[in-house]
Image (tube, rainbow, N blue to C red):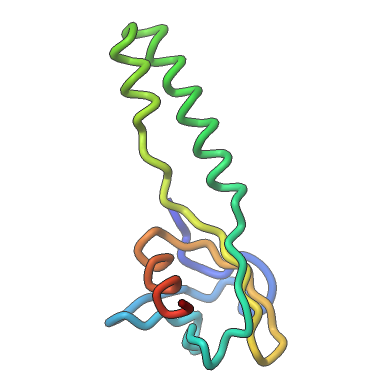
Length: 109
């Protein structure tokens, strides 16, 4: 489960929250006016895919072909790690859930 907080860099430990379509990190609004750039880190997705394969193999060993399908169809964990470069020159690495991720992507588009 996502922490919804800053895990490294400036504002470390600050909560990442969403209210009425606006994401804030501490007292900072995440928007085109405040963020110079961002990058979605993909390590979490690779781990999730490997985890799904392992669950599938374990499921097959325990429950046969039905277990294999159940394990492989498991959804990703819905956790995203995003590097945020603020226009102020500060940098934050945040861990967020799927809901906040979607709001940020919509805002930054």
